[in-house]
Image (cartoon, rainbow, N blue to C red; front, top):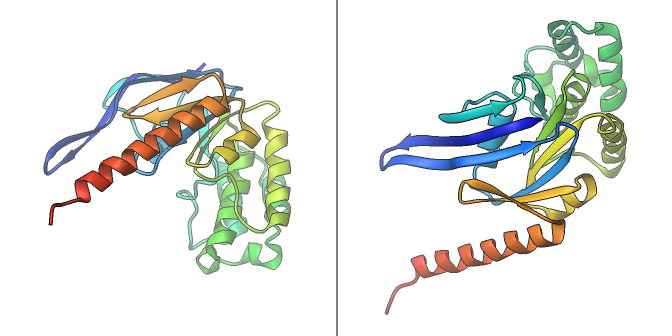
Length: 231
């Protein structure tokens, strides 16, 4: 099992504590594929960081082991002063993996060709995202956490990465946090919605989408009311 139990996370602001999660529970089988619909500003990036063990909750318990989950496509670990190959070899060494095999996999999946031996500081945003995706995909973990995106690039690149991810998901879990129901329809079979600091699980994607869209509509109406005034 993997997840968070009775977790609370807040941030101190000038107006006092801002509560992002309030005694939230989210526990899953570590081979399940869970899609969670989450609006912008709802805390999905904070939740991604907590599930990956990067950020700790202020209260509550983590279920599983630190390092069980990796942020799919997260590139905070990539050093711009190193080449793509050097970054791949560095991560392989850190995890005790074969550097030649690991860097060869990254080279094939990214298809950066000669740019693989250029410094990452010269990469485009898409090239850097491809490198991060490839490195994370091969590192040892039990499941992946995706914040809004799984892969980027043109259709050919996306098909290549989708195939590589599908092979890994035969024996690994996945959590996708996104505003896009189509993204989780393709990759997930359990669904929920992040609302008011809690995750509400739903019987199927249709009900999760309806709940999410209803909340978005109510939120838009409330914002319009706040911005209205009498003339």
